Length: 213
Ligand code: B1M
Image (cartoon, rainbow, N blue to C red; front, side):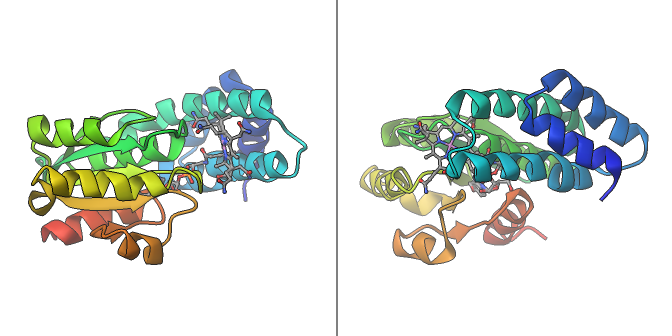
């Protein structure tokens, strides 16, 4: 891995938002692709944060500062990830489920879907089932994307699918779920149409489900 990406990951870990934004831009200027920067710089740094958070070396305030640095890097990449020369291929409503405040992965999925030509309606974080139902009625999406990062909140996904069914909307949309604790097996159990492990496979899955090449 290049020294620049290593430094990017380190500065993200340390929560230096200004440097993360500058290095993300520098790496682009040096010819690195947004995907390389994401995987080996920003996400690598955030994975190190996650590990030390789990092990009690970092605490919520430090993680929040690292998340702010992640957002700073992502905002540099956003125009590139969301750049689309092709017309919209579908409409997506996306959100992080009720009780869950993690938005970095969900934002990445939203950016990459936009980049693939989807019209994206992002409902944000901590979104109750009834808000997903209301958005399906007003925005008429083809796909609903649900994100959850906690084992305690992933169960909310089932509630959203059930609420969509009760509102008579389930058959008119495809539901894709994702987030660190979510698996293909869990997606099948709760009756989602698809599971994606990361943002680029989310795009592939959505296109697949809609029959778009
Ligand atoms: Co939280 N947190 N957190 N946290 N946090 C995790 C998730 C945790 C694994 C950390 C750990 O212990 N190692 C752990 C969950 C344990 C569990 O449930 N099994 C945890 C915990 C416990 C908590 C709190 C409960 C801590 C506390 O308060 N004691 C608390 C809960 C708050 C709440 O939500 N109610 C909490 C709080 C926070 C912060 C607010 C401090 C901050 C979030 C800031 C923000 O998002 N704006 C935070 C962070 C940053 C993390 C870690 C470190 C990083 C998450 C992240 O952004 N990763 C995380 C540890 C980890 O995951 N390694 C952790 C980078 C991002 C690009 O990856 O989000 O996985 P990810 O998204 C990926 C894929 O999952 C997938 O694609 C994305 C791109 O590849 N994906 C989808 C995601 N959504 C998708 C949707 C799709 C398809 C794919 O289709 C629709």
